[in-house]
Image 1 (tube, rainbow, N blue to C red):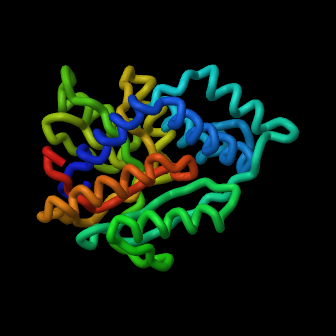
Image 2: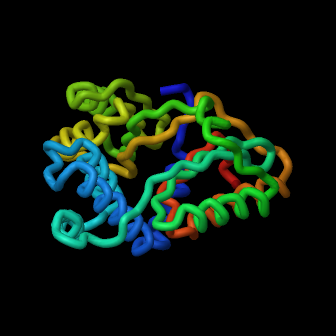
Length: 244
């Protein structure tokens, strides 16, 4: 890993998930359907689908829901067609932000994303404007309580992980972005459950915000993204304080 914890971001995502589980299920359902349409319903022959299944299980989506969505997407008229897009920009205090969306109307979504950035004192940039500040990795997060560090590291590397860190609260296991589903499946077979398991944009360095007013604006920006049903994931390089 790059030497800093993503736990503040992951923790915030988990809290939001607990507050709005139905919304999270809907978002992951879109990802599952898109993965099936792109590569078929068999996760053993569709690595993207395997990755999304791992993400779904990390977010406590029931297996019956996953199976039903896959079967529906594989059949005739499997629902609306969504387009996967990425928006990049800067939030308050120059915080780099990447927003992943699935949308059935790119003009509507682009307008909404631009509005959010502008409203919170940032600006939406062109493709590539902040992407160079991040590295694409698979990221699996496991709560550390009650687990032996050496054993988790051994199991993670045996499962195919590239790297491993432990910050005292969570284990962060990094993989090739195309292998996160396979590694998560192997670890699940060893009895592990996950806080998060998905491809991630990991920042090379992080930035803090010193002005309390700008902290409020950054939180507002993240909340606006979170409330938009088209938004699947938001990645940024803000190292929030414990109080933020």
